[in-house]
Image 1 (cartoon, one colour):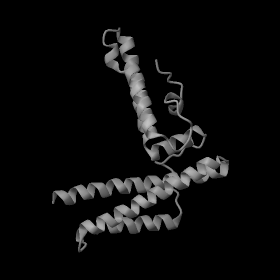
Image 2 (cartoon, one colour; image 1 turned 90 degrees about the vertical axis):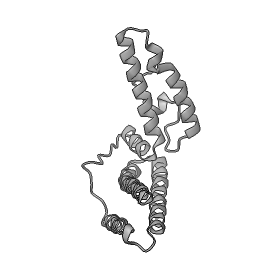
Image 3 (cartoon, rainbow, N blue to C red; image 1 turned 60 degrees about the horizontal axis):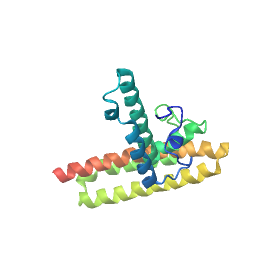
Image 4 (cartoon, helix red, strand yellow; image 1 turned 60 degrees about the vertical axis):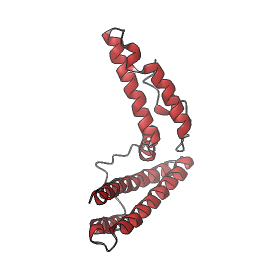
Length: 180
């Protein structure tokens, strides 16, 4: 069965790195699912069925964590002993916070823009570029691996989370504009 004491990288037999081979991750996921899928244990006793559900849930959680750059960043920092509390740790540099306020204001004004779709595309590209930049910054800092770099990586992840949330809001706005 699946060893629930293994971290997700060990579970999927991948190196503990920021960059993950997504095709290999998917392949390993399918292999693990064949082993632990609850349907395989339908004829077993209740305990075996419950364990299969737990194993499958752990494999699914691992996949979701390693697929998502943000979740993977957070997980790597946690493994390195630098967990990031995104809910309670909101200390950010003022330049970044001002940029966030300006972006949010621009998002709130998209519908009033002369060409809302063009403005939305511009904002989405800007946010996507920012996310890519934060991902690159995190990868560089993670690779260094020293305490100071890991501390900086945690700050980068917080900024990345802000931008990922903003990206989701822009996608929602895009959907709403298409429906109008």
